[in-house]
Image 1 (cartoon, chains in turn brown, yellow):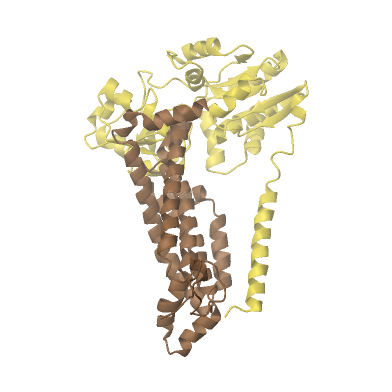
Image 2 (spheres, rainbow over the protein chains, first blue to last red):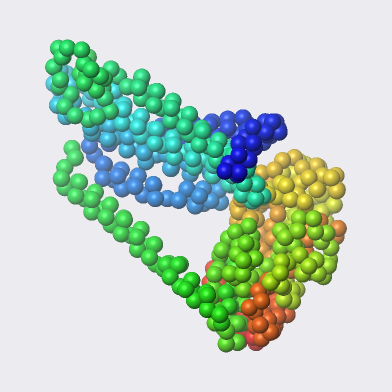
Amino acid sequence: MNLFASAIDWILDPANYVGLNAIPLRLGQHLVFTLVTLVIASVIAIPLGYLIGHTGRGRSLAVMTSGGLRAIPTLGLLTLVALWVGIGVVAPYVALTVLAIPPILAGAYTGFEAIDRRTVDAARAVGMSELQIVRKVEVPLGLPLLIGGLRSATLQVIATATLAAYVADLGLGRYLFSGLKNRDYAEMLGGSILVILLALVLEGIFALIQRFAVPRGVSGRPGPAATPARTPRPRNRSERTAVVR
Amino acid sequence: MFTITRGRLALVSAVAVGAVVALAGCASGDPLDEGSSSSNDSDTIVVGSQDYYSNEIIAEIYAQALEDGGYTVDRQFRIGQREAYLPEIEAGSIDVFPEYTGSLLQALDADAAGGTADETYAELQDALPDGLSVLDMAAATDQNSWTVTQAFADTYNLTDIASLTQVTEPITVGGNSELETRPYGPTALKEQYGIEIAGFTPVEDNGGPLTVKSLVDNTIQLANVYTADPNIATNDLVALDDPDGLFFPDNVVPVVSDKVDDGAAEIINAVSAKLTADTLVALNSQSVNDQAAADTIATEWLTEAGLL
């Protein structure tokens, strides 16, 4: 408890709010690093996941590869990449992107797979092109699972982004490494608390996104989407119809 | 479409991958299955080592020499860094541990004065808690240093630390984050020598391959590399002279508990007497460059030195 109190003192100490090691600066670096990593991972994983989900091809390969990627120890990969490209931000970006891809990829293709085949077939029957099916049916209906994948990737990246400080003057991990090596455990715990707070804030934001960004009539639960349209006043969102216009 | 066959293929593949991972885990054996039960035996000497390959080689040499002398040895290697194992030594659960005079002294007494190798050794003897002592120190040192590349040294005529003032380009220092706050760190360079340090880049691998690569790539210009590191020779690095004793001398020294009797002390002292600076670099080189295992390196050297 005493250590916890001194960690709080460390967070509130005005001396930690100035200079190149200031808490707001480190928080900002950590956040930007996390967001950029997620964007890179999304650019790779979402189109790939959509392709797998839409065509149904390459799923076993994707399952195996992303399972393999999950098993790679991030610090080991980070060191390997850094030995190749040198120290700096590149190696952490590569290592953390590899960490973030599997959950996003899984979110993208399971989102498509969870859609009732009849809905997709109906869209095809009314004359939609494959691209239209993806854009107007599968993407909106798969959104809840994709956002779930992004949410889980965010949580992993924000916690693991502390490793960026292993080879770069970047992020909240600096407090952890320097606290550990200097036996300044208040700094170390303070840094950890900041990581936790940042993770909680992002979790909250994702919860909001999941609430508002998911199209009306779509719930996160897969299932038959053919509730009669004239059901009087659905009691909650999940009971509403998945209408495709 | 996703078919049954595909699903089965995925399942079989997943099981296969899992099995490979599980077997790979087994190959190295269970690190916990030996030793821990025997460590309480009164006639067993527990030899520990840092999580540092060079330290492990020295510990293995002590262990094999003791075994040759008829002692039962329990190896507790790769325990961690000093903050992790020092409480264990102080609690008496480890009997022999290879240490480094200056670094251990600074860990035990932050205000220690340092000085020559002998002065540091004497101060260390005073600083050790009751129940612990040090045997003879070896001539071998493995100490902190300010290291640059040969090319960088040639460009600016660098010989010792003070000559870094001749450098006209910005100097970025790289190393573990604690280096930034150590008494010999960037602040000391500025205050004692007036050397301008442009920045500090954390590279948290204890002066290992990442640090060396950063120096060679010129991402950093000045780093703390341990002087017994064979990478200094293989990568054309230069450890700058330290005539003013900015760094404490770090001679290899065995820290021992009361359980080490005169006979065992004699065996370890005989090892230390033969352990010179060049020897230590050669031993490290066998590990780094030839990828030899610690026990192989130890057996070879002990045989060669006539100690087995």
